[in-house]
Length: 419
Image (cartoon, rainbow, N blue to C red; front, side):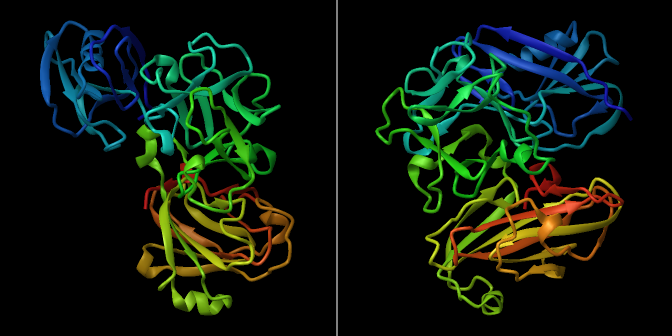
């Protein structure tokens, strides 16, 4: 059934403060954009409250006001309408039940959040106009007093790797200033970008790595000063080898649970790759965490030290057919695939330690894995084991080709399910 969509925007005064799903509940603002996700459908979760209402708008108004509500089923079989308030939405369970006369509304996949530094989590980053009225080129600055304002919220689309300022709708990117490459809001500087592309298009997107670093191109975003003072800006750094460093841990606190690739990092691993694979990460564990994409575009350790990274997730094919996986690695990597972790098979091994020209260039420089028959919308275990550390040009990217096409696409957030 084709999804019908109805968008209802609500903006009211509120007396409490919290964020639930894409509903913003602040001292001065109560705001939500609901859309109809199912006609003759309802969400399977049990409502925590049923109320009688005269209209759909009144039901969604009530949901926006109540701190526990994230979505609503509306039963049009009854007069007046029955409004079923839900504390779960499609972020918790993206399945629906057939129910004649029911309409299901929620606010979509959660993207709204403040932007903060782990080291100074009581502060956040806001436009330097300290309002929703911003000018092209406005910088983002650290503030300890404005995190409860509407202009402190951003929309982060992990699938496309874009960040937009919520109330001004301006995109976030970087511009060169006297302080370095600083994060700004701009329509003229933020060029077209997409994680479905390669080269410059992908490199202009944002992604989160397992260290809680917010990455852009081959750089990591960090505080312009580690003082924690109001007015600090965000800049791009190419010193991303160490870590995790607190001044580089820039994150969206309300979205942290949405990352999908479990990543394990090991230092001091055997120099011989076969010895390392046999070693199977035993005794070398250093740290771990979730990442968005199967990509590493800068060194994670001092270049003279051997290190390795294992990335694990579930791949969800959009079509049925034979999928090929390709990797661009410096130094070495292997790719495994299977119906589960216990049944995984090696589909690609890249031992070529020569300089292949850069990440995301698999079609020109690296071997292709053998085709893997996959069924649409079925989850498949996917793993990359990567070894680096012998040169300054450490990187890894994993890509796939859709059945019947020669186009290579990065394996990113939108194609995965959380491992």
